[in-house]
Image 1 (tube, rainbow, N blue to C red):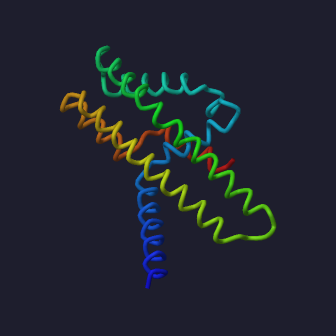
Image 2: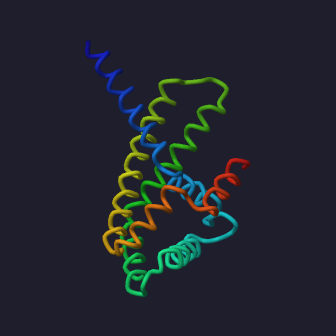
Length: 169
């Protein structure tokens, strides 16, 4: 009975993580994959450059005031210290899974353990992203919130192009 509970708990955790993964737009994983590339992000942009680019897009799309833009940057900078260890853990588990599968012999228990570890990190990343988004929504006007919701629902053209590019890597 204990083995069944443990197996059921593991399956429930895995299922929850998979569902949660689907809910995320790929932001965290794409960001952590980018940092694998010798400290730079896609198309040669550093993290700071990409943050500046993202902030410029948000500022333009939402018509942020200078004060709101400053608050957004503060939120992002405050959260970064909590996100970095999660990005590192995600990279490490991704590498470990890849190494396990390239050995020529498959250790399902090891891969499953790594996958569960990665799922827990992914849950933490999803929670962090939701926390950041919530903080950002709190400083927006009702009109800006409505526009940001619309952006989330419909996506942005530059985001879908980025994912198409990363699929061909």
